[in-house]
Image (spheres, rainbow, N blue to C red):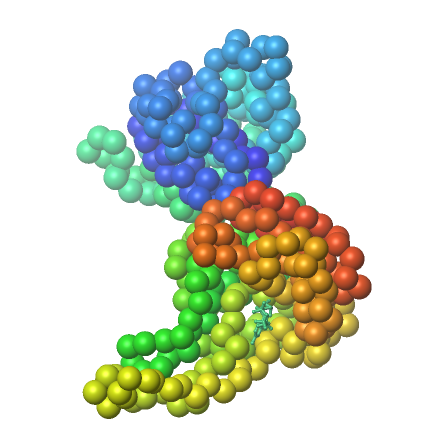
Length: 393
Ligand code: CTP
C-alpha cells in the first residue's frame, strides 16, 4: 500500500518515527508529509532514513509534478500522528494552507488521525466541536490515550502508542480492501524433525515470503491465520502467529484452520521425512562409530491431502522451490508437481545456495492446474506476495 504519514508539530512527533518504521517493515511504501513545526521536533534525515523516501514539507516544491495533490491522489491510506489541536482545527475548517492540508483534501483514501495535546486543549469546546465535525465526515480517530503528558500533568491527551496506531490504520484500510471478508490460512517457515533433544533435520526457509503473503493479505482486508514453522524472523504485530515445529504439527494445525478457510496458501517448506524414532537423549559419537545411519519415514503430504479434501469454492495454493535454474525445465517440474499435488495454483521459484532463502527479494512464476502461466513477479517478497493475491482474486 501507498501510505502517507502526516506529522504535525507536537512533542509526540518523535514517536511518529515508530509509526513510519512499522509500516515500512510491514512492506508498505511510506511518504512522510511533515509540517514545518513537526520538523522542529523530529529530524528530516531520521524520517528519510526510516521511510526510505524523501520527506515532503513545502507546498512549493515539486510544482511541476503537481505534488500538492499528487501525494494525496496516490495514497491508499493517510495517517496523521501526532495530530495537534491546531491541525484538527485546520482539518475541520477544510484549510489547505500547507502541503499536508492539500494532500488530505486531494485524497479519497481512508484517514486516521492520532490526536496528541494537553488535556485542557483536548477537552476545549473548540476541539470537541472540531472532532465532531471531522468524524462526521468519515475521518477516523485513535486515542488520545490517558497518561503522562509532556509536563508534570497527566490525563487524556497522550498520543496512542505507534503499534496501536499502525494496527488501527491497517484494519481501517483492510475494511475497504479487495480481500475484505476472506479467510486465508498461510503457512510459513520450514518444519524441523528432531533426531534427539538437541538436533533436528530441517531446511533453510526463513519464513519471510510466507509472512509477506500474510501481511499483504491482512492489508487487503483478509482475516488471516498465519501458521509459522520455526520462523527466523518475527511477523509484524498485525498478524497472530500459530507456532508449530514438525510436519505432523503443521499438518494438524492446517487441517484445523483450513476447515473454515476460503483459501490456503502453503508457503512453508515441509520436511518430507522424519526420523522413525527420536532418541530420548543426545546421540553420542562413541556409541555410533564412523557411520551414523538414520531411518526416516515419510511424512504426510499436507498440500496433496488438502487439495483432495477441499470444499467446493476453496482455493489451495502451493509453492515449489526448485534448484533447477533453466526456466523451461523449471516449468516442466512445476507442471508435473501441480498435477501430482492437485492444488489450484503453484508458485514456482528457483532456489540455491545464495538465492531464494532468507533474502528480501524473490522471482516467481505462478501456474494454474492446467499448467498455464497465470502470473509472474520479480521484486521484494511483498511485491511477489501481492502478485500472488492478485492472481487469487
Ligand atoms: N508440501 C506439503 N507437505 C509435504 C511436502 C510439501 O504440504 N510433505 C507442500 C509445500 O508446503 C509446498 C509444496 O507442497 O507448498 C511443494 O513442496 P516441495 O517441497 O517443493 O514438494 P515436495 O512434494 O516435497 O516434492 P520434492 O521435494 O520431491 O520436490
